[in-house]
Image 1: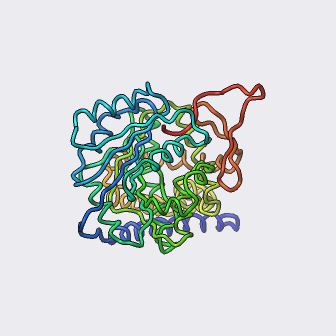
Image 2 (image 1 turned 120 degrees about the vertical axis):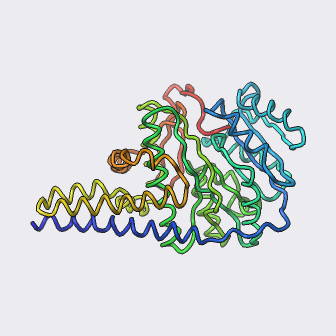
Image 3 (image 1 turned 120 degrees about the horizontal axis):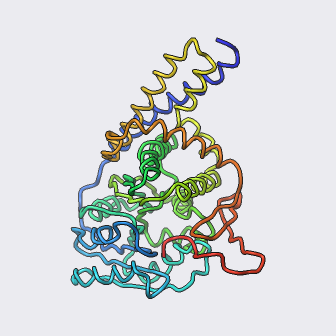
Length: 392
């Protein structure tokens, strides 16, 4: 084997080791016990809204039908005529025994509009235990019972619900779903294992103590960051509060996006992730074994067959453990042959994430700062350049 092939083979072998680590990480997470339900404390569920997502009615209905003794639902949208807010009000009339309140926030003072909605709802929430959930989330009736049981541990401050992504009716949405349900969550489970705990949070559904949010600086501080979810967990862990990946898995209905919108979303995600956890982002090179295996096979053609065979075997094992053992995702079993294509596409966007610091979000442009904060880029005329980002 030529000298220049050895580094590539070493990188490929490191990616195989990562895949094995992903399997171990999933098994370790599955061994995390769910505490028995004791006295279940009241819960406030905060739902930022912005328009009508695909499947929004069933998403919201799944929260009205929680099998839980005492909880309230709070909904916030920027405008009184927001169709998502109107839908939430209609559903509330169908479930009159479920306390629900509705808020119109107006234009947000923060670049991160979702945080403004969460700040208003947190201020008005009746209970200390808050469950913050995006509008594209669907759950089963026992969700609040599982989370409340986990929070019976007085040391726990923040819990992230792992999610099983569900695509919309587009090919690009399907590919992204396969990546989320294999590659993305493998990284989260591995981080939990190698860092001996969880020191981050992931956005679609997070439960937290109100006092923990206040302790890390409150929503005004978190609003400065594009990935406010990630830094909430990071800051809470740094302050000594317990942070976990919950044993409850939600459904994240990511909707259908055409090619251009999907690619813009992927680029924004990667640029944001690189600034939220710079060294972790570099380590993501090992989460895509196929590109590394192809490069190693091309550099060492005499050994290409066994390099590719090992790469595919380890990748399949890791994908199966995350998608099936952890997330119970049926899509990867049906569309396993698309995982290599998703891996190649993900690798391209991972490389692209190293370049540039400008993102577009809901029609407006922002500059990402080195520490994960972000700022609005205003046109020279000072004119508005589209709706604000975030839900609500």
